[in-house]
Image 1: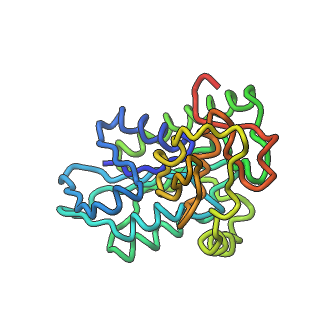
Image 2 (image 1 turned 90 degrees about the vertical axis):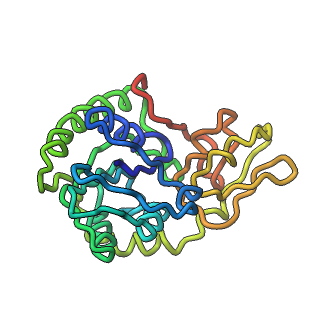
Image 3 (image 1 turned 180 degrees about the vertical axis):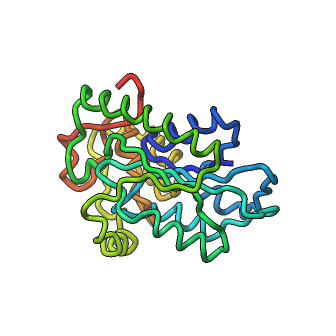
Length: 251
């Protein structure tokens, strides 16, 4: 089985591609799925995978909560791996994951990273379509390289931590403590379609008088910004003139 989380499609694509080759089932880590409190049955020959993006050199908060509440039946040290997608580098995200798994007496065997298009439009603009295509072509080769290690159940770590990995504890702490929802807004282009609210994996968005309002705990996946066809969703004033991104091999 493969547990995955994705805001703009990078990690979703990786999970789907791995699942296509391995035949594993896919489970989307969302708040609604978390609330179900499911115990997952693990077959003796089954592998367990986690695929997720890197936020501020750490795990998305929703992924962290999901893992903390994760329960398996039939777990007997089956092969477990993780694939992190990232724009710049992964930092020490796998250290955080390993610590969480260890608390649940689970062992991470394989750790991999795939460099993809960075969607952090809050901080900077999206790269050009030509650069996106070049980067995503390289990502395909990286995924193809990783799959045999998973199929062979190799104990290996192949991930780019980067030169700033040492600040991961600080950035991770800041990410978990920040109220990410307070600067979200919509401009006059909003047509009240409700797509941002219905597709929010954290269930952070509510419709009030026909317009979205961000309340509660936001994972900061930016799915609402990049998924708005009207380009109505903004974060403060920084995103107005910047591009948008959703995974596409045609990019």
